[in-house]
Image 1 (cartoon, rainbow over the protein chains, first blue to last red):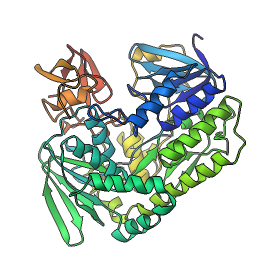
Image 2: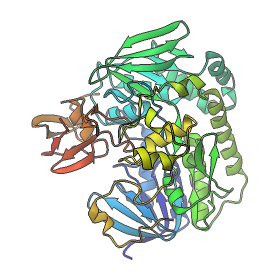
Image 3: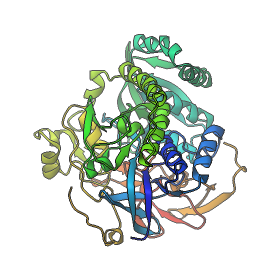
Image 4: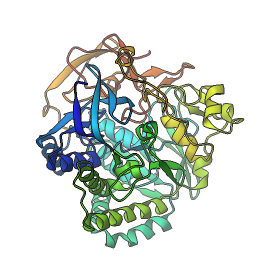
Length: 424
Length: 85
């Protein structure tokens, strides 16, 4: 084996960066891998047009820490308890580890509705990520819809890049959103953040209790139809930025056999106080342990990094800060829980599996993901069920299928790298 | 965003020359030419959805290598990108 680290951290977002820095600070050699080109995860994704000085400082400080080796554009194809098989642009390689920290974050929850496959319909965080990397948005009319605080953050980015944000349609009721605002006093940093977002969106309507019903257009998006308090409203637009919350990226943990638990409809990794998973040398931190936000991710990353390096922090301060941050996430979850109507927007003709063009009607007869997959190819395409699997779980149809290596489509040459690609 | 702050790179999308700031991804370059990145198995036109490498809807051919996620790869001078059109 050519390369080995005491601690290997998968994911270089807030949790992974904190874990890497903490573990290296204890003297451990740390490998930090991420699928993206730069560190920071989604929340601290570098914006070519704007600087986030604080995030940049944290990222730079971590990557400069002695003993931390950062490997960008590296995706885990397979893993066992001692090594991972990575695919990088220059080829595949195996990396050994003593301890593994899973900090793979979350992805956006995207739900099917008529027209959601039209070009121009994107995730809210998705369009935000694209514009940060120079997607031409200036002067384009964008409708933002779905649920949760990410809609506001996405709208701010879009506006800063010159988009004409026509409105933000939040499915949660005004009563619930105001109820949340009333409790912000216990989280001053979050309150300031909320006010800053609102100020940056001056003049943009934020409408509660409204949700997308359909997207229209022939070969691309031309208009959306929104359910409002006073009937359906049609809005002409160039883009629809839509998101219904976040889903933990548990695939790597699942492949390794870490115990998962479900919080409502989606799986997360089960952990103890030291961020240990059910597997002795595997730790997890951040969104992958349940959506908790950036502050919780950083605290948990540090706890995991220290524990993985063999110097667990036995103090109670990080635990109480962690609980406080997580409590805020619970408030968000309660506020933005989805209206049942949002789960029933798809018609029998609506495509559910975008990779294999499987309509909702085709999976109707099946009671579990595996049966549906074998008969219809639903979830068998390039994304390996990451989009439709999460959507179907949210819709209450069935939970995602088991994962098998490779975790993502891979080059044939990557699979010829000697590594036991086996089912767990 | 202000042009000129970043050096620019020049590449081809479906035979058309485009320029994007250094650090931009291939998706941004494609979007200057067409909203259509790939055709689905049934022939429907598709464009990026997740923007972060999960959904594979933005797949294009880059320098003869097909099925590359345009959102994950940096635009580089001289690249030749082909959509499914």
